[in-house]
Image 1 (spheres, rainbow, N blue to C red):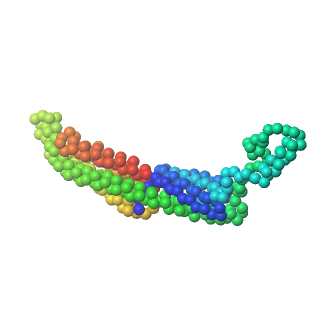
Image 2: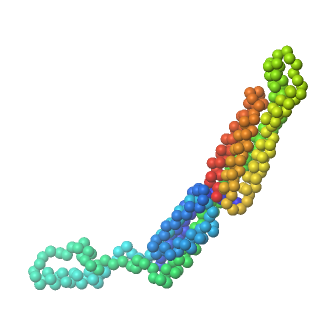
Image 3: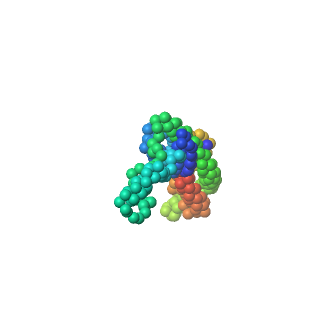
Length: 298
């Protein structure tokens, strides 16, 4: 199953009054580039979390962000008993000293202890529960990420197979064209020698040697055989498990090399030669599409 390196996932759960959220974002990268962001309360879990990720993800730039909130904590809570005492003291002093005016609510709430908040850090027992929850959430998030990467990978595999089929069609066309081009190349060689030698008799032995040399220089069967092998291996890798992106990328480089060599042996400006050049350039365009797509494969 082919996996893309592009994906996004989220997971959330609550434990002991605390809410943990995790967000995972992945894009392509030559190796595994893991960036893990954790709140201070979960920092002790980082080594274990990194190990869990490396067991599931082989390549890609992976950003993982954890957030921690106390589900029971309110943003602000008024200490009503303390505020009531402040007001009683205000009224008593006002009456005792004959003061006017009314107490200001904003000033009252700024007095020490007038506002309070819930607990801001988990207890040791809660920390243990949160550590276990964090691991479970990470695995859940990676599973969801893999589901998206798998869907992307399936689409990638379809595109890659299409490119390979077009390259194979081009390879078969080149085989037929090269066979048809050889007699014409032999004829051009004979005519060229007649032009150079004028009325002199052409030595059949020398002509045969030159024809053999030309045939060897124009023979692209070896390049096409290797190209056929590379495309077959490419298709096999698309069906295999694990991280195959680097091996696919290597095969694409080899396909490009063989096609370039075959193009350099095209036999000139006759009809077969021009058609071989056209087919070879179309094959190189497909190979370039392969190269771009393979960069996203894990």
